[in-house]
Length: 135
Ligand SMILES: [Zn+2]
Image (cartoon, rainbow, N blue to C red; front, side, top):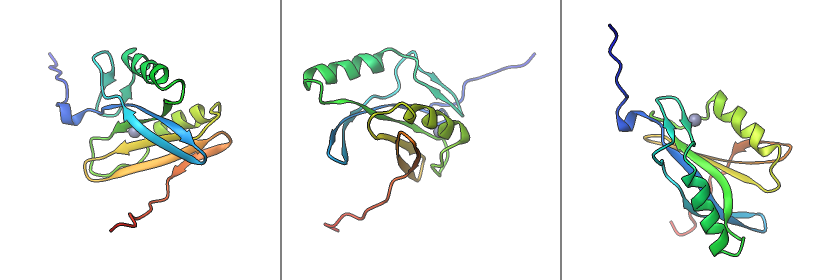
């Protein structure tokens, strides 16, 4: 008899959507959702199944007069590095094909963060890292 157990909380992916608005060429991210009860989470996947993400996005959209919307998504990788997987890139490629505005994608690893931007006809590419001018 095989015994199966769920990986620990820190061993499973988490994620959500990024909520924000567009200001010229800039994307202002103002909030994000986190994992919700009906999401499917595993060692190598995060499926946003819970309708709560859409409900939260709708509330932001309504309260902002249609300015704040879903501008992208984020998820974790239970690893030190944060490198997009083939599945990540294929999913993003499909999403940006129909996007009318830039989409932001963030992967959070244990010791690194990866951030990329994609737009229709342009593959998602890593965002340029700009040092804080105050430091
Ligand atoms: Zn991933």
